[in-house]
Image (cartoon, rainbow, N blue to C red; front, side, top):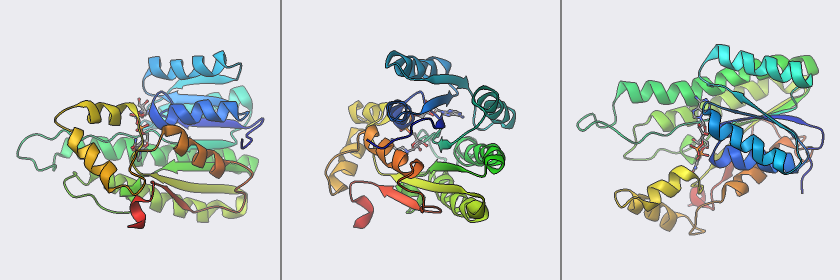
Length: 257
Ligand SMILES: NC(=O)c1ccc[n+]([C@@H]2O[C@H](COP(=O)([O-])OP(=O)(O)OC[C@H]3O[C@@H](n4cnc5c(N)ncnc54)[C@H](O)[C@@H]3O)[C@@H](O)[C@H]2O)c1
């Protein structure tokens, strides 16, 4: 197992899916975990699971789209632990409910997705970088998607635009702070078997979309969230000390076609 012994790590959106799997795996790899989420119950649950395993974790409620919340989150981490070694900016939403007739061009939908996914990532970077500059060290992984690299017909465009934006942000911030010992990378999963996707797969109205996606995936299956977590841990670890500004695709071969 890759080691994160004695590292202080922040994971946003740690209450569910990929964020939760990464929090549990990072704790097992020796990290002290700060699990942040907008939903208190699920975030607390992640922390309880880590503690039940005999590892260290703290929950902080945070809406990543709110600057005051993110600043407070970083203040809590620095007050409690004195530093931040790794951050996984994972929190994100993907809405697919549109009003009939708007063809996905709902302004409300656009603003909500951009606020959480793109502005949220930018705000987290803003405050994480401030701390990492003082340490002259740190690693950050931003959550993008395969639709951060290609388009997807039938979607609103907001999700894809937010995930494309995260890759641009990742490259720019990586270049800006490479000399100061800070590494910044992005990860692009294909389909991962998280609660939301499982729900879509079991709903008769949407299950065919998931089936079609799996059929188009060379490995003919979805990823387990732990398989995405492994890639994030590698990017954060001392096994990737020369990797920055990179976009790592973890998609069962989907984009190789
Ligand atoms: N599951 C997939 O197939 C897949 C594929 C590619 C990318 N992603 C990306 O991975 C990330 C996690 O996805 P998931 O499938 O695990 O989703 P999920 O819904 O299971 O988990 C997302 C978590 O983020 C939290 N969250 C939502 N808005 C927030 C906010 N404003 N502030 C703080 N926390 C917030 C939610 O409460 C939830 O706990 C997302 O950014 C998503 O776009 C997922």
